[in-house]
Image (cartoon, rainbow, N blue to C red):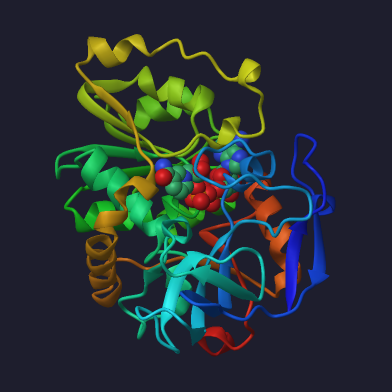
Length: 343
Ligand SMILES: NC(=O)c1ccc[n+]([C@@H]2O[C@H](COP(=O)([O-])OP(=O)(O)OC[C@H]3O[C@@H](n4cnc5c(N)ncnc54)[C@H](OP(=O)(O)O)[C@@H]3O)[C@@H](O)[C@H]2O)c1
């Protein structure tokens, strides 16, 4: 089987040369272990920080280790009583064609898919961390209400491409998205359920915010951070809620380069709330989140947008695309050509 290992530490930006594709023997499960054939692997902006061992929640990576990554696998051999051949399971598989997990080790965060009649790729997108993150941020952190005027940054990305659909399903009527470039902005309004779009690369962002939110912003779902967050804080209304989902604009910066917000004082001034959250902390709620979102997929309220690359060779390129903004929707790679019938 093939697997990607870490070849070197990234120099600022992540590049193909940071990884090496190699052949390895297919592992055999020992007692308590489960072998899965990888169907899809996801990529996420945070992965750059795995390479430099900057996160507290991933195991350190040495040069030569298999790159970390979460995916969907089908159980091909199990020596753990909770897993049977044919089960579809999301877990930390690593960037490899077959993943071996210890069924009792919480590190792998295995989650058996509860709706395997739907597409397996949803085990990377809407019925997985990406979709769970969108719903937690909106419903449990921001406590979105029907009368709230919602703004979303990174709106055409993996998480953001699901937020407007979910906001509508929760009863919200006004949803505006921010994304980079006219094509993505058209996608927001034509395909992803947003009322209006702001192109942060070409538009006058402050002027557009003022025009679209003359009375201010009730809820901001933020994937970007930095200056953009600061600009929005300047326009929050009384009792606004700001859900800090991510800060992709700062992932390629050093802490010294981070933007120093001027408008934080408005949290106190407007009796507002600003709260970060981490999807892994919500693991006990994953089944409920999955069922809720699956219901929206089944009734057509949520139309997942997936950006699927083909073949394990594409893993580094798929990751790099996130920092270049060339993805729309949830980026993933199909590892087993037969997954979901190849479509
Ligand atoms: N809190 C949690 O538990 C949790 C869980 C999952 C993800 N996250 C975070 O949520 C955010 C979104 O994750 P995702 O998986 O959905 O990724 P994503 O949005 O698909 O990330 C890629 C997109 O980010 C935008 N982007 C890249 N660099 C940017 C910059 N400098 N300024 C503004 N936008 C930039 C690009 O879109 P444009 O073309 O529009 O610029 C790009 O297409 C990330 O920050 C991620 O770390 C948090």
